[in-house]
Length: 130
Image (cartoon, rainbow, N blue to C red; front, side, top):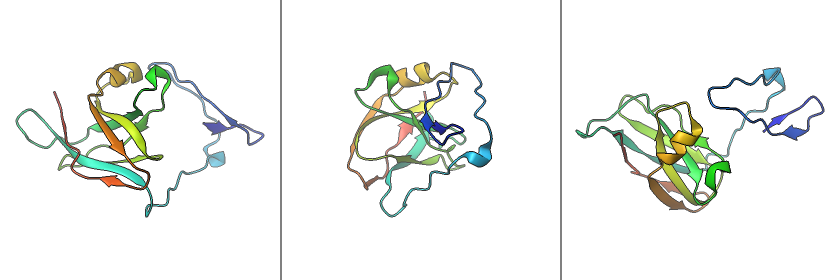
């Protein structure tokens, strides 16, 4: 969601590999969650040999919402393969490794389902890169 020139929220649909002009970034608002109550998931991404994998993006979608669900992304994994993903609240989510620019393809690769309560932090939710 972005705000238009009248400060009204509006949806922006981005097509696969598409670009969208969002306007003046000075008008944007930074999402700054209260980290003491944030809902988070963290773990390590490893390859088939068990080695940590750097520069991988972890994504989550609310489970059971089909292709129109929201998509949440974690920053790239660190050199030790670790990630932390912040979520907007509790619920059931599917986690996956984002290896493509296609949101639809990424959704099909989500293989790990988690259940989390608002404000919780699930640790050691490890994922394997195929």
